[in-house]
Image 1: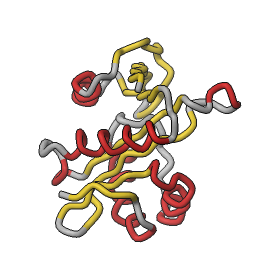
Image 2 (image 1 turned 180 degrees about the horizontal axis):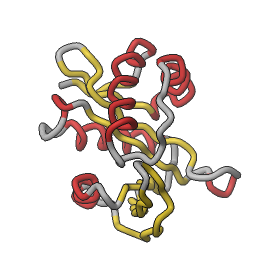
Image 3 (image 1 turned 60 degrees about the vertical axis):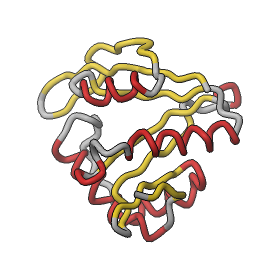
Image 4 (image 1 turned 180 degrees about the vertical axis):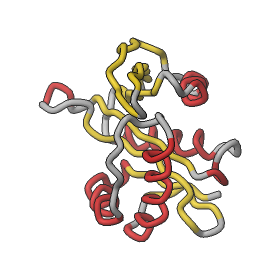
Length: 159
């Protein structure tokens, strides 16, 4: 397992991972599938703020951060996203990715990272708690997917 900065060629395997999450879970509330070009552009735009876990020479997951909200007052607050393929789950890849992402964030003078976690995802809530994120709020029924309303749990880690 190798943690490294994402490269353009990672877009294809990461798109497969992300689209599986989008199509089959409530981990994310979006139902819009992503394209390889979209993800390639995101990798280019985010630079070091897009970290990848490589397993057997292939990108098997990522962690990335992006603006929490628009405007200069929010410049040091970021939201993050993380997704793992099956072979990268339960082996420390998520923790390693987040450690690398937090290192980049500290260099970028980020003050805090936020996670928006589906209330239907107790595994990611526990994961974030285990790596130092605090539950700040639950936003009731703000997501709608698979014909039902879903709560969003906001979690924060101050760096």
